[in-house]
Length: 91
Image (cartoon, rainbow, N blue to C red):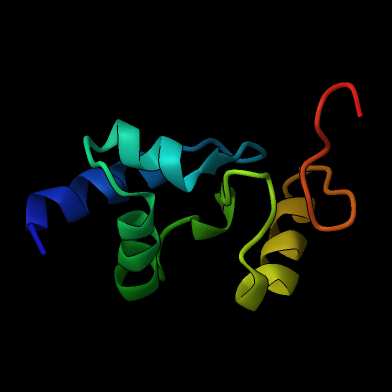
């Protein structure tokens, strides 16, 4: 994997402010990548020291295998989650 791409993803995740979220696709776009899945892979392999919990799926949900911890960390930052998902406007 290209180390520059990894560093761009890491920088984009670090830049998400506390109490806010971004999707894997948004992080990919900010890092100049085409693949949101690549962002997930980078975070899984090299994201332990990042605010990984601020990165959500495109539908506003947490990844199932980390949902409990991810939702808890987001709630601790003041992010409102309803049934494991960010509330959508108009719903």
